[in-house]
Each structure stands twice: as structure tokens, then as C-alpha cells.
Image (cartoon, rainbow, N blue to C red; front, side, top):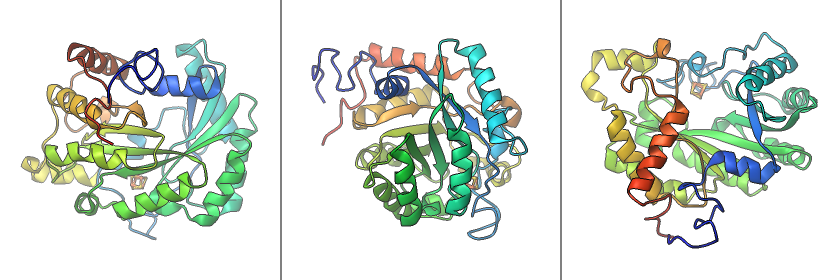
Length: 321
Ligand code: SF4
């Protein structure tokens, strides 16, 4: 992709060297909007026995849930506490999106989903919802219902896909295939709903070359936004046991390696997909192995942007349609 497609130089309409999420939210809502996480008490078919009981080998939901997010608390209370939490950090924000984050947030009857989502949307400061779920937890009926909701408010569905390779998905016990993910994304996008996806880099058994090749595969998916995470070995997971038994099976990225990798990946990713995250940030007390030292997410984004600048490169520079 050449620069110069508009006055800002990039097709996403601003001067940052990647299609950044905060700007996407600003374009969509015309103001700064912050997400508030909710744990609505869902479970997951990969844990409750309908698909499996052990869950994905890397999963410990506690490591990713903000402290104000507890399923015992009413959704309204979680929203109020989340807003207070964010007000301290981002004073200029007045509107929020409810992010149904923990476990699989479409894994219930439509009646239950309607009740839970309505509770969040009934809050005066909530402008929409983002629903995190698994590709095998949606069907035509649920997507039709979500399409109706999306006629009134902003709605996005964020799928955990994690890898484009079925070999890896089997190894991490995801309980679904990449084809399931493509089907869910196509069903979601064809109804005009916003789509997001989550991928992990560094999963056991994948080479760096295979991970880089995912840029082309992901570029071909009907996605609005993506989140990328480096693999972290979280305490209390099946992966922790695997890692302790066979550490040589894991090639965890050092920060310098990941920086090089993510730049190459971004260059190959379509400019049309908004990038929401480059890394995951589990609290250090959950980590089996601390590999990057103390780097905050905002510092990481700055370092990536600095490197893009130094190399005079950008998202999609090497993307070929
Ligand atoms: S990562 Fe998601 S899908 Fe996998 S076990 Fe955990 S909650 Fe379930």
C-alpha cells in the first residue's frame, strides 16, 4: 500500500502509522468513548462439559478481569464502579461502551441475553455493547436477535479465534476449528454487525513464519477490529503444567523479538482492519515467567510507533490485495 491515499497520508485518515482503535471509536461516536468491562456470570462450553471441562490450556479468566468486575455484583453496579475507575484515569470521557468480557457472553438463551444486555444498555452513559464470545456460541437465531439490537445501539461481537491453524487449536484444546471461526465471522458480518477477533502469537508448535503468514489469512477475514496478544504462561492453567514439564516446547517472545515480529506482521496486515491491541497485560502475580519486565501497554504502543517511524514503515505497507 502506498501512502498518499488522503491528506493524512494513510487510508485511515490520521497520521499514526497504524489503523488505531481510539481513532476508530472517535470516528464512530464523534467523541472519546471508553469501554467498561462486565462479568455477567456466563460460563463457557469448553468448561461446563458441553464441549469439554478443562477449558483452553492457557485460560485463567481471573488474570484478565478488572478488579471491579465480579459476577456477584449487578451489571449496573459493575458499570458504575467501572465508570468511576475510568474517570480517575481519563477525565475527558463521558460516554461508555459495556464490554461483556468474561467467558462466553452469548452462551445462554436469547431471553437471558436480552435481559442482561438490556440491563447494561439501560444505563444512561452506555452507548453500546461489545460482546466477547466463542465462534461456536452463536447461531443464526442469536445473530438475528443481535442484528435487531444493533439497529438501536452500537454493537460489536468479538470472537476468540487465537490461531488460524487447526493443529494449534487442537493443541490448546479450543474445542472449535478455524472453519467454525470463519463461519461465525461471515454470519456476523453478513448481518451488518461489527466484528472483532482475538489472536495469540507464540502458541506452542507454531513457527514464527507460520505466525507471520497469519497476516494474510486475517486480512482476508470480514473483520473490523483485531486484538493481538503475546503468549503469557498464566499460573493455575494446564499450560503452566505443560510448560514446567517441557519448557523447550515453548518459544516465548522476548520483547525485542516481539517488536520485530509485530512490525513485520503489521506491514503485511490489510490497512482496512483496526488494531486494538498489540499485547496482553496479565498482572505479574499471575505470570509463571516474567519475560518483558515492567512495560505498560501505552509504553509498548509508543515503542512500536517509534520503530515504525524509524523504519519509515506502516500497517499494510507490504499488504498485497
Ligand atoms: S479462553 Fe474462553 S473459550 Fe477458552 S476456556 Fe477460557 S473462557 Fe472458555
